[in-house]
Length: 161
Image (cartoon, rainbow, N blue to C red; front, side):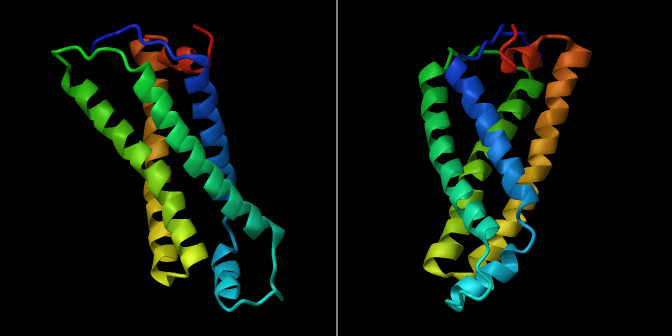
């Protein structure tokens, strides 16, 4: 794998960790969202849950931050090298798929919540589980870079290199 000495600017680092924290938060507070969603569709206030509302608003924040992150990433893009290894290409595909899921998962949830398309709640849940699998793969790759390749990629994303 080519070492392109990639560095991340402050905006990229802050957006990366803010989005990660919000996604992880929403993943762990999602218990009970199915019930809250059904009550929301029934227009019932009997089961009003502050955590459910927070889950929805955090999801909307993730959409906005992901759009901002994509803009920052495009503006920070370095020139591509002509001879990228297979591992580089796989990494790029996984990153692009992860960006797509970070955007679409909350969009699916918002579509279910605000437009009332029930099936989108199921799509949201399935896509979230796929995204969390991709997040684990991403974290494993970061650890691989740090401890096997020893290229400092993880330290760069922590703002230390």
